[in-house]
Length: 74
Image (cartoon, rainbow, N blue to C red; front, side):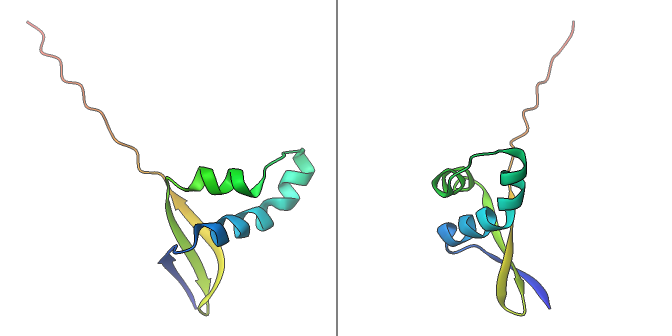
């Protein structure tokens, strides 16, 4: 069964992302390091994807703040 839980270990989550994306990085010549991924995900809302209670992936959400500008025309 697939389930989700909030990430507790960002370093392990970064490693999963690095491992899963490695073919893409290699194919397109992207040079990412694990430390870079860890830094980039630290400000996101991170969730582990679990299959039968085993972490198999991650979902990351970026919360954006909406700015509402009100103008009154005379």
